[in-house]
Image (tube, rainbow, N blue to C red; front, side, top):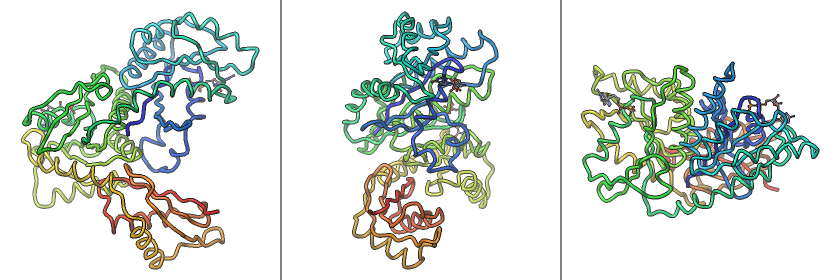
Amino acid sequence: MAKPIVAIVGRPNVGKSTLFNKLVGKRISIVEDTPGVTRDRIYAEVEWLNYRFTLVDTGGIEPESEDIILKQMKRQAQIAIETADVILFMVDGKEGLTATDIEVAEMLRRVKKPVVLVVNKIDNLKLEDNKFEFYSLGLGEPITISAALSLGIGDMLDEIVKYFKDKEADDEEEPLIKVAIVGKPNVGKSSLLNRLTGEERAIVSDIPGTTRDAIDSLVEINGEKFLFIDTAGIRRKSKIKEEIEKYSVIRSLAAIDRADVCLIMIDATEGVTEQDEKIAGIAHEAGKGIVIVVNKWDLIEKDDKTMNEYNNKIRTALSFMTYAPIIYISAKTGQRVTKLIDLIKYVADQNAMRVKTGILNEVISEAVMLRQPPVEKGKALKIYYATQVLTKPPTFAIFVNDEEIVHFSYDRYLENQIRQHFGFEGTPIRLVYKSKK
Ligand code: GDP
Ligand code: GDP
């Protein structure tokens, strides 16, 4: 189930980060050691009523002068236009309308994506009238909020989720495995895609909603349908390194969100880079099936130890996803590409696997007998019952006497026990503890 993406666009200091922080869900703090999540919070999972969406902050580094601000705002808006389902355009109700706002609004008006115009810093009723001048932007009714005081946030979210309906309809598709090939520029994403789609008759899909601005490829391989989500996108020219990286991370985010399986592509000649870690962290956090694909294997001089050395390095760098299989391929020669297809199918199945409650509880009780939970804060943890509540990713509710005293190391232990018995290879799993009243 793909979550809609909402991108915030707005000048520096209008209050984007303030709103972002208010909306950041609990989830982000769960996996604190995930790269790309804590280091720079460019996205957050938001829950509102029965809706869930991903909020993306397209804001870049702080620019110093007015003309740079405008340039950067245009770029932000472009990223939002390319990746988001709904654009949240934030303006400053205290400062009033600026020339930059007008130019950006013009850009946003030209695209068909829904735009929600949000006037921030309306801290009290007296300021409410400040919204009127923003009607001139031609983006419809301005919604007033105070991000700092948490006023009007509910109405704003109502307005945003109104646009999600079409998106949900997209989920009623025929069964197919959606695959995102993600990684840095030049790692070989397009080459792999060509390999995967070229040999079979590639049907360039024109399915509404699945294509967005990108071209996805629908391919049938041995009777199984795969949808390869386009991630190549536009290669933006920018002198600012951070900006290029941020842009490609946001693009990957959009693709990852829609995928069942993510291929994390690593360049064998470079090893795992910080950006690879970030992208892998996002896929992990999103609960997707994952295959680590080391490409350009043809360029590496090898002996019988090489693969092992690579394995070790990758496991160290991506230590939060030891569950993900690693495959060494060459998109250029086609080496192991057939095997990769099997692996994608396997990982998609594992990500969607459901285990029976009876067997799960046997496994958990056995694990508890083997190793008693440690005493935390003077209290012994008791585990009563476990059940799998969700798939994609497999999520387990574990009922305990006190959810606050579940030690990190015991959580890891239980996860390992579950994996040992059931596999769940290539997929993150989640254990959610609930105190039983
Ligand atoms: P960003 O650059 O768009 O991310 O803006 P920030 O979130 O960093 O906010 C810029 C400044 O505006 C900070 O000093 C915030 O405290 C302030 N600010 C944000 N939201 C509000 C608000 O609702 N009311 C008022 N009065 N100030 C706000
Ligand atoms: P993308 O930016 O990730 O889509 O990367 P491309 O598919 O455009 O590939 C970037 C460059 O790497 C091109 O020159 C490819 O020919 C080359 N390349 C891609 N895969 C391989 C590979 O497996 N082996 C070698 N030697 N070169 C590759």
